[in-house]
Length: 112
Image (cartoon, rainbow, N blue to C red; front, side, top):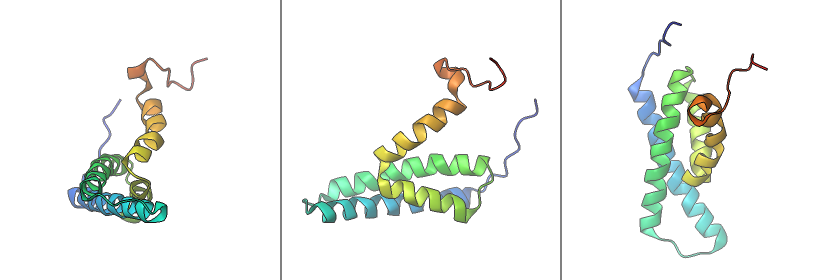
């Protein structure tokens, strides 16, 4: 099997990461304003950084699948708005399916 040839564009991954940081910070702020809860600057930065981390990872996956900047940025922006914890819960089934052999799950669709 030939290895996948990926045209890595680190600028695009950096843009995805920045979109995720901004989305995480804005999402946290919106949730606090909607709930009329106290705003915490520390949590604000934590949400931004953790969303940025997952945005970076999703950006790598987007590069692997040759996603456009618009498509990848939109997905990352929406997921980061939901927050890092939501990003993990949304992405976990996809990762488990893709890397199922690591977890003892059969990912071979042809086997019965």
